[in-house]
Every structure is written in structure tokens, then in C-alpha cells.
Length: 122
Image (cartoon, rainbow, N blue to C red; front, side, top):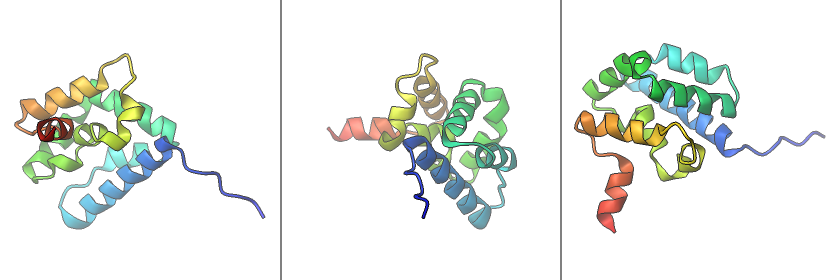
């Protein structure tokens, strides 16, 4: 009997984003087609790399980001998701300032980033 390998944190992140996409499709008129395709076709590590490129090149993702904000789904944007404490190990040590860009985009659009909420509670 073959053992199923344990999921890495990157695999868990990928699955979480697939779940977010399924919820959006089920509950809203928005269909994150490109994002779903890219995340769905790759490994967890590749999904993390794609996410970083998406955040660092906002021209690519700006329409989806704005659409989700208009649907009052800011907490489901990839910018918000990468700032959640559980995913920070995947993005926090990167030289390309992914977390800073995600935080800037959220605050620039009037959304309080999740790490700011935690800091306010302390």
C-alpha cells in the first residue's frame, strides 16, 4: 500500500486558493478563470511562484482584484491571503517584497491588511 505524501505548506496554500476559487464561483458572478487555471495546473511551489508574479505585476491581476473588491470579497483577494499569518512563511522571506506590495495594494484601495489588524490588537 502506497502512502500519500504529507502536504507541504505550499500544497496547503494551493488547496486553500482552489477552495477560495470554488467559493467565488459558487457564491458570486465572478469567475477567476486564469487564476484558477494557473493554480490548478501546478504544484504548490509553482502556485506560490505564480502568486508572487501576480502580486508583483499588478497590471496582470488588477481587473480581478478590482472585481473582487466591488463584490465585497477583499478578504479573498490573493493580496489579502498572502498576508495571513499561516501563509507568511511562504512569502515573508522573499527578496522581491511581495508582502509589501500586497499590503500597499490593499491599503491603497481602503482595505485594512490582516497583519495590520493583528498589530492593532497587541
